Image (cartoon, rainbow, N blue to C red; front, side, top):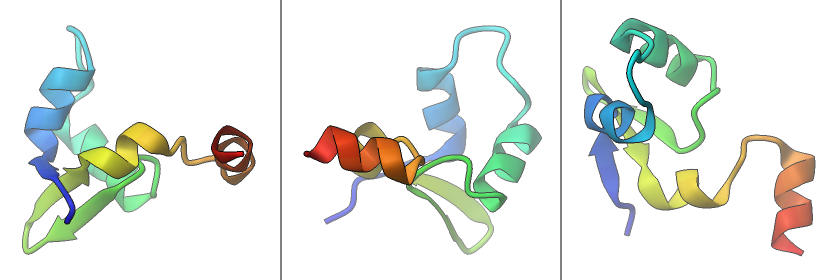
Length: 66
């Protein structure tokens, strides 16, 4: 079961001040830059487990898994 966290809360826990705007994070989610991000309705969520284990780079992910 996926552990989902609101994008705004994930942003606060992951980035120190000064943080990029929430709009920047939404753009990154749309472009696939944030691993494990998904949109449900009008809200963006981040799957915490996927985000911790994946980098977004397929080659690096394969090296880290093996």
